[in-house]
Image 1 (tube, rainbow, N blue to C red):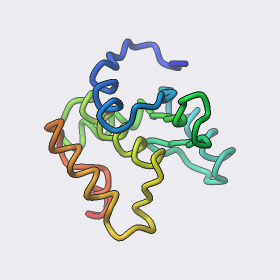
Image 2: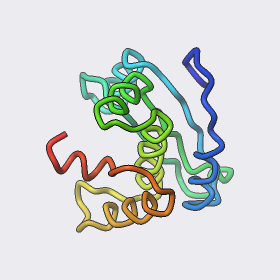
Image 3: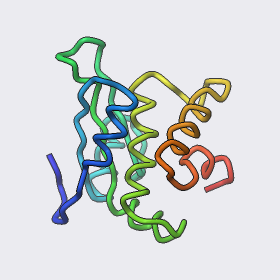
Image 4: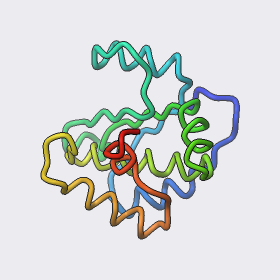
Length: 137
């Protein structure tokens, strides 16, 4: 389900997904109002966010989980960090894919950051979400 009016080429995201996992992923694009509602309902957090991931139990018809990306936040961050919206979507997608695989930067000893850094380098993308967050973004 894509909840936006613009066309988004997801072929690059498919390459990223296949590099990370052979499982399928549901990808949903939403606006900031919809993301706020999802974040409140699913996590009890009363604000919008850039990306959410919802993992499924292993072996659930080869579906790893769902990724929800806030396109309003994509536009804002792409302008702020001077890169393309496609690059911002790819960064958020990598971050969410790693969460779906069980990585958690809030409790690990840097494993998610290292894996994210490796993937970002491989795909020649700008600085990662974790690095920006650590800088106070």
